[in-house]
Length: 299
Length: 124
Image 1 (cartoon, rainbow over the protein chains, first blue to last red):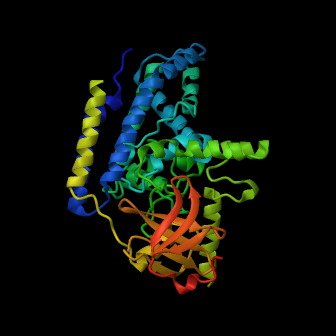
Image 2 (cartoon, each protein chain N blue to C red; image 1 turned 120 degrees about the vertical axis):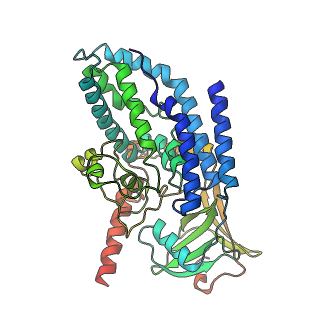
Image 3 (cartoon, each protein chain N blue to C red; image 1 turned 90 degrees about the vertical axis):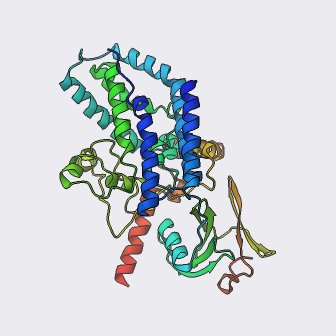
């Protein structure tokens, strides 16, 4: 069955909505834009599209090959599509969680987090190196189950389109019933924040249920406004450096590694990992913050 | 190819629009903003002393534990770094130089007419 590419269809709407958000930012004084940051984000989005075009055929071929070994023959039907959409979102949750906890995958995903702004252009700041980091592996189980390849890619496209609108500061809290199940701008602002309380939380794509189920949910608080970006902000707005800087760091660290254990830690440990627990990982930052908060309370 | 060209045009248009709408500020820091920035970006950092850069586009801070941090401008945002205890620091011609030795940030610079008193004795 031929299915359209939801992302390609949505691109004109993305452009219009970015313009509308800029106008609202100017008018309401909520949110932030910077022309240099937006230019970098949009350039990274275009680069991601080009990279996807170059590697897409290989991912498709691999998916079709895996689909040969499917456990079930699942045809096109509404219940099957709903199941594919939900399971694809579960696969996305685990990909996304891994992308924050394992440096190899983080090296690709960090691009999306490298802006200190949080607006609709940030949504388009996407990886150039996802194929290289093998992020497509997380979706392969769906083909093993037997979902048609086109169905899974269509669901994945819809998932990506859903995630566009949640990259804004213009929407406060969604109705409670909605935010209980669905990912919202508020939930995702937490995900993009470097506040110790918020680090490595809210990995959801569409359904926030996964975070609640697997213990990674954190609600946004009025007394702890999100500060966006990455722990060690990039010293440049150059999109090319944003795309490759973590890979450059990995290459440097791999050359300097003094033992197989250190090499493994540098490649597959959490971002910021250093030998002898000296690194500034999310967990270490949270511990330091908690210790500071306790000291403050005691004083 | 046409799609790529259209995308490039859309990027140029939106970026230009952001510029034209005035999203091109180079903000300045005051002490409160510098403290908030450093404490918000460095876990466990509690600023005790602040020295703003001459032009207000950056700051040097020391916390109660004697740790130092530097804030530098980046677009309309800020770049915050902890200064390692063994970092080479020198002050020449009204500019503080901190050797951070990071790619693209080997030498962090801050316009300071004089070294703050609370920094004396910190570096050899």
